[in-house]
Every structure is written in C-alpha cells, then in structure tokens.
Image 1 (tube, rainbow, N blue to C red):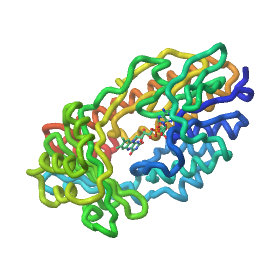
Image 2: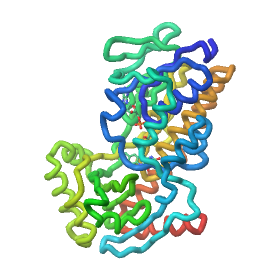
Image 3: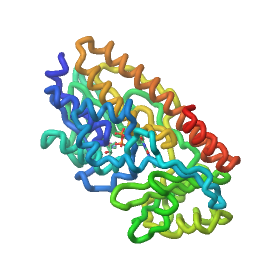
Length: 373
Ligand SMILES: Cc1cc2nc3c(=O)[nH]c(=O)nc-3n(C[C@H](O)[C@H](O)[C@H](O)COP(=O)(O)OP(=O)(O)OC[C@H]3O[C@@H](n4cnc5c(N)ncnc54)[C@H](O)[C@@H]3O)c2cc1C
C-alpha cells in the first residue's frame, strides 16, 4: 500500500514526533499523533535547545518552519564560560562564529503544534504498547486498541513502542542532576556568572551548569556522580532535603558558586539514562522508532533534539519512497550510525565533565573546538 493511502500513528508529541507529523501532513498523508500529556501546557517543557545547521535547522527548513524558528531563536545566546571550583573564570567565549541559535523548548513545541491541522494531536493518550494484528498495528490506548497501518515510536526515553522491536532499554549513566530555575529580574547573581549562553563550573567529579533561556529565565543543573539506587532515592525526598544533600557535596566550592544551590526554584531531580551506544533493533515494515525512543543519550553532546528532528526528516522521506522496506532499512542504518557517533561524543563529554581531573579536560575541549579541532 502506498504511504498516501495509509494512516500513520505517531506515539509521542515531542519535537521528533510533531515534526514528522508536519512533514507527512504537508505531503497529504493521514497522520495522528497520540500524546500522553492532557494538553500543550500541562508541564513545563524544559530548558533551551540549540538547533544545529546540518540537522535541526535543516529539518525545520524542510518543514517550511525556518522563519517561525528564527522569529523565536536567540542567536545571541551561544556563548560558553568555564569556571573551576574556586570560582576562577578560565574560559570565556561570546559565541561569535557559531551557528547554533538557541530556542526555548516551549516555543519549539508551539511552532510545531501550530503547524499541524487541528485535531492531529490527540491528547491524554498514554500508550501502553503496540502489537501487530494481520496487516495492521494495534496501539494500546487508554480507551482500548486502535489500528494503524504504520506506527512510529517517538515517545522518548521510556518508549512503550521500543519493546516491540528490542528488549534493550536505557541504562543509568552514573550521574544525577538537581534542576533549579532562576528569574534574572528577581536574582541577578546567576546572570552575572552565565553571561550570554551557558556556563560550566567543574570540579572533582562534580559540575554546576547554568543555561540562559528566553524571557530572563535561567536554568541551573547541579550534577554529580552517584549510584543509581541513591539517585532514585534522592528523587523521592523533599525538595529541601534533595537540595541540602546536593549542597553538602559542594561544600568545598567557592561561596559564589555554592550560593546557587541555596537559591532558585526547585524543578526536580533527574538521574541521567542512555541507551547502549549503537543499539540496533529488529526491522519491521510497519513499526519504527525515532529520536530518544531510538537512541537516548546523555545531554553532553547537545545533539538529542537535533537527532530527533533529523530522524523525522529522513523517516518522512523514506516513508514517501516506493521501495518500502529497502528505504526504511536505509533510514534505520543512517539513524543508527549518526546516533552512534553522537552518543560517543555524549559519553566522552560526560566523562570529561565528571572526572577526577577537575576542569582541565573541559578546558582542553573548548580550546580544541576554538582551534577548529
Ligand atoms: C537535562 C537535559 C538537557 C538537554 N539538553 C539538550 C540540548 O541542549 N540540546 C539537545 O539537542 N538536546 C538536549 N537534551 C535532549 C533532548 O531533550 C531530547 O533528545 C529530545 O527532546 C528528544 O526528542 P523526542 O521527540 O525524541 O522525545 P521527547 O522530547 O522526550 O518527546 C517524547 C514525547 O512523547 C510523549 N510520551 C512519552 N511516553 C508516552 C506514551 N507512553 N504515550 C504517549 N506519549 C508519550 C511525551 O509526553 C513527550 O511529549 C537534553 C535532555 C536533558 C534530559
């Protein structure tokens, strides 16, 4: 059956799933997005994302959304600063020459949602899994199974579509984040540290990270190595206790940096997980994966959303081709090798930030990047 005559179900209305829906809908394909959230504003969408020219930006262009993206993007927020644990600034770059404009996640999701026909996204659809029945794929939705010709798992880290294709799932990456939010107007201190973009303060197996978002908002992550059990337990304690526990682990750091842990609004505790690098799955003509569902990685390559958008573009192109399974296998081969390279960078980035060598490996990384390495 040609793609034009098929009904495609996309599980997950994150950046990858929504962009795929947009690309297919523009080509006349019937598409439904099944999203767990009850409405677009149910939960804050998280920090700022930078879109890279060869992946995220290219995918937005292919969807005819580059103007909408540029209208909300912040090219002025591409700077990088690095401090050591004494609070000494050891690297400061204002971001000139970079082409990775930042955009708030909420803005990106809104642009993608507004680009779809009304009713494309069905909210409150927490999918429990998929099975195949005859030539159809059955999606287990809250009100019972629904049948589609093709189903795409774009449902992120804890995908319920992935188990149909592989038994492999995410493994703990060894690091936990405590996440806080600041408003520049209320508290100018983080803004003076972060400058225009991001800052890392790196010490012995620990890091404090600030990231400038739109509208004067600044996101803060305190990260450290911790066993998985302890990280999961930290998620269960009160915000006050989680903050105090983390602060204890930074007690030898400069007061200026440590202050960050006492201030700001509590946003959560986030243990980091990643799929094993290079994970492959069984090919199926009617069930596919994209984005984090396929290749979750730690955020230290800064490529997760870019890969999700690039996957969506490649998958839309593959689905429109006449040679069915062959082009889908080509899609999966491209996706897997592209993600494998990024996941290696993410794993090496995490190892540089959380090492017993303090800020030196991160400084070397920034200097290499400036020198074009
Ligand atoms: C702390 C942190 C910082 C990051 N920073 C960056 C960065 O700077 N740059 C970058 O490129 N990437 C970054 N990432 C990674 C990036 O957020 C992800 O790679 C990206 O969001 C993946 O997009 P996606 O569409 O595949 O999945 P998601 O964004 O996870 O979207 C999945 C969607 O599926 C829905 N869903 C989940 N389960 C179900 C279900 N059972 N049924 C129906 N719907 C479901 C969810 O509600 C969600 O809307 C970061 C990640 C973290 C954790």
